[in-house]
Image (cartoon, rainbow over all chains, first blue to last red; front, side):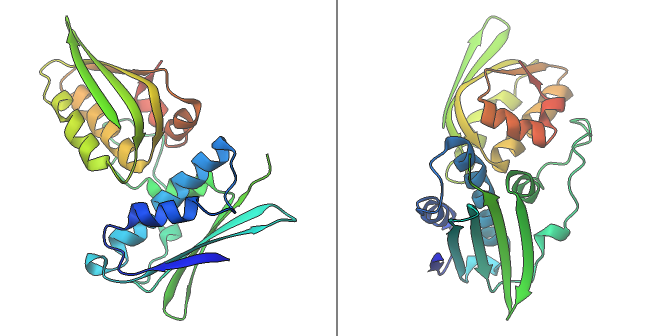
Length: 136
Length: 100
């Protein structure tokens, strides 16, 4: 896994996203890159804004690619407040504009843009693993 | 992200170019704020050059749509990039915003 630990992470979203998107594991295909970047941005933003009070803490971000199955794995790890983003209810996308609440779309986008997303809490860390099959 | 706003007769023509992401969401919010102050909004947004939006951009488009409806106005978005359109489709925004 190609990974890097960022500490502290206050205002570091764009640096962390750029690190992940520069990984040689990320494909060149523009459609795939779009979906991966959007998922990475939403997931990283979640940690940067909510994991630690004032962003004072670390985030470890990494990628790996299984060259056989062409499954890309993106892993985010932090030691912030235990939080499982997958427990959050999906927004009701059939509501009218009046009824729609503002926000709450980030993780929903990750779920839709990636092929799988899992969360576990391990050794005091939040671990979020997103996977995408990157063959065209 | 570059936002251009032009008044033409009764219409407000808006052009969006570039990306709306974590680096410029606050600026984008600031740039489109005048559109929310229009008394009788009739907004036409050309998205030809908009290549990316995260949920932060979506948030602003929903606020704008709500504001337009509260003022009994209209808003359309046109020439949306297919990848951006998919984001609007997945989130149900295609049902609440007129996309031509």
